Length: 289
Image 1 (cartoon, rainbow, N blue to C red):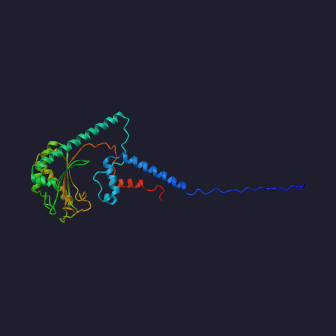
Image 2: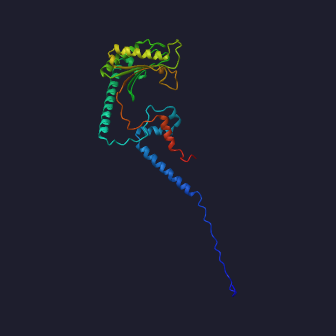
Image 3: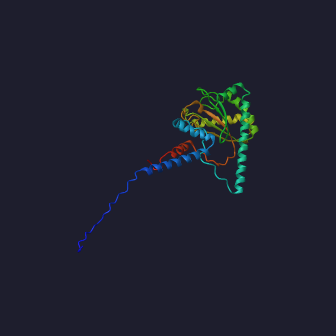
């Protein structure tokens, strides 16, 4: 200035903010992991004891679980909410009662069939060796006559629909029980994957002929014609041992007593492949890393 007074200029130093680093990412990842664990716990708690055992079996041996899937598919979704429509609720309850009644009747018929078979010591031994198998399936009561040796001549001659004495004995024991049950019957024939080498007489024809042979035995032993709902031949399309299409036990005849009613699907059942994907998907990183 003109009077000689010095001019003083003060400059403040600006400090840059320190870099926060990736600590927030770690905290966020911990939060996401905790939420995932919480929902996993809630999901597992909603499962039945049987389904929990299946999930446990998967984690203990994923490879073995995939190669030997359970016969019954586990349910992985919670029950659907109840309907607010009284009419639908009543209809659903009536359907459930019908399904439960049909299952109870099938269970009673199965027990009576097993008791009838056990009257013959030879047939009882075949029942114990699974040459004759009775079980309740989602479709109904299923009775199977399964070839139980390599010769394949327990119930039928090899490569033909000629009935062996054992098949006649089995039908003579179980037909009166089936006739008393008065339920529809479906007879299905199955073969292994070996070709017959008999020209146009193939495994489809053979399986169908064997099913018709069993149907005739049922008629001769008391089952009415009106009870037979269908006679089918599947050849080798539905093997009992899928990993070995040539296995002798794939040669069998199935007698099915359908339930006639279906239990409402309040719990959706998924096949094993989708169960595996569902379980594995829970543990996949949603960000694809």
